[in-house]
Structure formats: C-alpha cells, structure tokens
Image (cartoon, rainbow over all chains, first blue to last red; front, top):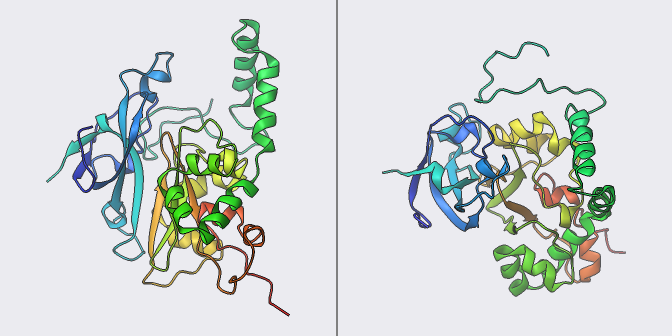
Length: 93
Length: 214
C-alpha cells in the first residue's frame, strides 16, 4: 500500500489498449485518497485469462467536480469518488 | 458494422452500442455459453442457478439493513465500515460481491451511486439493477450533472447540501443509507423498512414518507 488517506494523487493520463477499469474522465486529474479498500486481482490481465496476479491495492479517490467538468453547475464542494487501482496513481503535489 | 471512427471521449474501439430489442451482446453471450457448456467448463444448470439466484434477490434485504441502521447507531457504524459483515449479522445473504460499503446521507451530504463503465450494483442486497441504471444517459449524466439527474428523479436539494457521486468502477459495491424520514418516530423496524425504496438506496430518491397518523 503506497498511499494513505488524505494524500493528494494524480491519475495517470496514459492510454491503455484493452480492458481496464479507470474511467477516461479522471485520467490526468488530481484528487485525494478517501479510503484504502483492499487488494484485488488486476482486471486488466484477469480479463484475458490470467490469474490477475500480482494483486493491486484499490483506493477510493475523491475529486472536486469542478476539476473534472469546467462547466459544472453544482456547488464548489460537490465531489465525485472513483475506485482506482494503485498502478494508475501517481503522487501529486 | 457501421462506421465508428468518431471521437467520443474514450480510447478503446468497440462495436456500435444499439438500443434494439435485444442487447448487442446477446448473440455473443449465447455463443460463449454454448462453447463453455460444450467444453465442459460450466453446466447449463450452473447458468440457470445463477440467474435464479440473481432474480430472487430484492431490495427488501437492503431495506432491512437501512432500517436497522436507523434504529441502532452501532449497527450503522458497522454498516458504513463493512456492509457485507453487517448483512451476515442480520442473517442476509451478501452474495459473492467481495466488498460492500455503506454510505450515509445526512443533512449536509447526499450520496448517489453510478457505474459509468458497466452496471456494477449491490445485486445481492438490492436485486437486479433497474434498466435506467444501466442506460448510457444515466451513466454519463450522473457523473457530470448529478443535480440535474436528481432533479429529474424528483430530488431537489438545498444549495448547502454537498452532492457526492460514487462511481463503482471496480470490486466495491456501494449501498446508500438514506436519511430517516421526518415523522417516523416510534415506528417499528419493520415499518421503517417498508419506507426504504430501492431508488433511495441508489441515492436518486428519498425514502417514502410515513403515512399520517390518525
């Protein structure tokens, strides 16, 4: 487990051919760790017949809606939380 | 196969998604099932048993969890930490989902759940997801315009309530604990459970109002 609750992280902006569970709308965006769930097998390899090992830690990462959608119409503190695997996260300032 | 070379904001190629009577994936699923049965990987009875289990689930189980959480703060704390363990505690079947997490709506925060990538949903506790939950409009708009979506579902939030959307993109399933309705003091746990609707546990509705006394 590399990240702790409250830490700022950025989701990698990389492309990934094939099955993966990182939604495009958070790629390249920064948020903070809200929850460290547990380790799970990697869906990117499991989807193609492998055992999905090594497991990856899964985090709940919270983003400010206004950081994701420039024209967001809600209040500034509205948030969206997304489950993201550790190998998609980078440290952010 | 029709043209599919326009950019619509994600980065993998796929066949056009249609809204015909039969889902685009149905023929593929049938072929896959045939092959798996033919090769002896699964038996047809396994598929049927799994479908039977899925459709036998109902939001009544989730409602029991919520009603208990409303009357028992210690239970609510456990439900927020690990809904799977909380379900087992009430003798409910939490199903094969690895982790279920409860999230609580309060006077300050309103949660709603979506799966933008497919249709992840706490099926063991809520039954099969409604069709709209799996629809592209809900999946795209719930994340970018949650207040607009909530308004269409009849939920008008005060400006000082924070909206928190949960996108269940991986192994975790989320269950919303809606706010206990005003005027429900003195109701039994069973009566309270009858107020808890499926949609209120997805976070797109408030629970039903108690019938007026007298």
